[in-house]
Image 1: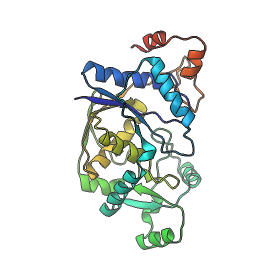
Image 2: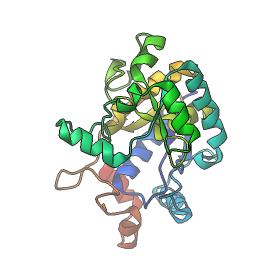
Image 3: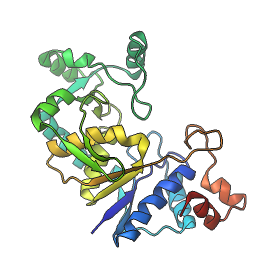
Length: 277
């Protein structure tokens, strides 16, 4: 059975881009007689709010979406994430990173590198050079650190990999496309990359549909699936909905929310028709 999902983060109200992604995912499941799941990605406890989670349910119901009653809440799964982090450490593909985000941004600006993948900065691998014994001592002394994936070492274990996208076809994994990404953040003990990969496997998602802005992340997720012996789904990276100025809808840009549209009198049927559903 085909299983798709919509996985928003409760860090604000949903906008038209979210609406398109959710409707797109549900439509795939309906067409193939499958199942449509909902997941609340609330690992970022500093920014997520219960009121936004309730807003997600409210907005999706307004759109007429119907999802499986079992909803996965990421914040209940930190123990599972930690188990996988330990497996990756035992494989020798993680290393501690003591750099601050500010230091990384300054370092990249000095060498003329631009951000890569969903607004992230591609990491130079500075802490990869630290002697393992020194790293252990700094951790023992309580120095704050994250854990990064040594993509080159991981790729040497997995060998050549591919993933299939329903729109792009077969794609060869490029382990360096995002650099050595963070697998476990200093503040929350996991990361988007690890959590989403484990949760898709936990929910049995067989077709991951999401925006084309996340296509680079899929290279990392495919690596993690192989390292952790997880099932391999298909992907479908859909187009991004943009406003009249040609900019993608975004919480950071304070895009018009579905609630604001609803309060102004917009009907869900008209919005869905405008989005092509």
